[in-house]
Image (cartoon, rainbow, N blue to C red; front, side, top):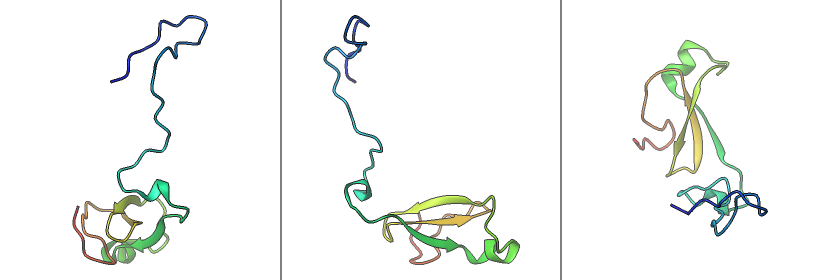
Length: 82
């Protein structure tokens, strides 16, 4: 953990290492391509096709975001769980 500055004339940034935001282990933040929209899961599509209020989940294999209303954990495109 970086040390905090003393809040002096430098605005409290004495010796801190700045980590750029967003920081991601996926490597997507280093690319110029936006995340892919993988859509709704089959169960969520049956419940409400609009997708309003669905929660987004990241798929590391597809490098995209899929959406679900329920506690599903499987990507609808590749089947990756996690």
